[in-house]
Image (tube, rainbow, N blue to C red; front, side):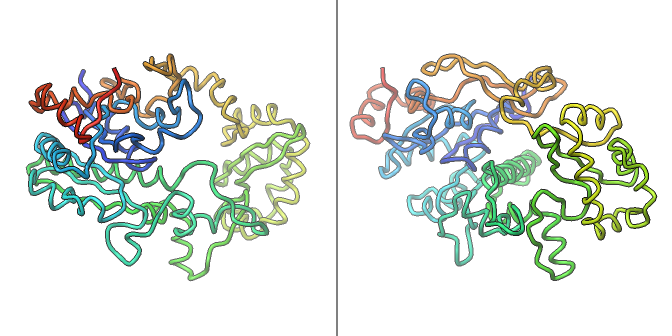
Length: 400
């Protein structure tokens, strides 16, 4: 069975994470994603470690299922290639500084003048309008500005940045959502759309509990450390063997099951802990009895006990433990892919599974300019014209 986006063509002018991750998700679903890169170095992620046989594993993780076309967009002949591709494409995806593409004739109005039905998705740090539209907005800065860092970490310490590139990924996911919604509208005969996705606003939107708390009460949310803003017990606990266990009890029944599992049945009847709201109001005395009870037990034994009781829990796994876990192995989360330079590589598959036509890794991340000649030939350029453009520096061809 064909994949959902088979027959859809996406032009991606992306760097780093937000644009490329969105392009990769569309490619995983079957879209033909043409990644347009700058000459010499291409996407800046290509230089990021770790390098395997000279190729970036970080780049490979974000750019599978794409073809690489390298153009010098300072040259009119190169921009003409993009506009020819625009005529035959469904999506134009970019995450450049706002205004940069308008300056070279590839902004949304200019592109949609060539193809009114195209979906033009722009991801940027602060959005396409407003006084900060041109402000640099990489992941850490977005997390700081959006308030995400203000609620992350221990109350007495410096705010803690997240361990993953959360702001970029939120931006990529909202960009994918915007693009797919635009495609549905296009397929329904409603024409193309221009989508403006701000990474700052994506992070603000993702902070659902924190924004709701502030907007409802006027109180500024503070850092909760390992605890939950609304519920308790719902945090990390240290066990007797020095491991950490995440335990969550988001309703009364789960609270009672948890307390029984850690030999605290007597405290279940304590009126201070009778309801969700009361437990949070009396969090300090509750944790005074729960924390030492958990610390008496080993992580593996307690995890097994809580799982049997149906209480949400997990050891804090490192990446090796994640990929060695029998559940992750049974779900075949890792796929092996042959790369022309890196050799056999292990990749995290797309997390979506369909009954038929699931996302797949059809091709590894492209080498720089690997498909330049191929794509130009598809547009009708003959070898002599391609060679002339390469000689002028308008296009970069793959090394023979």
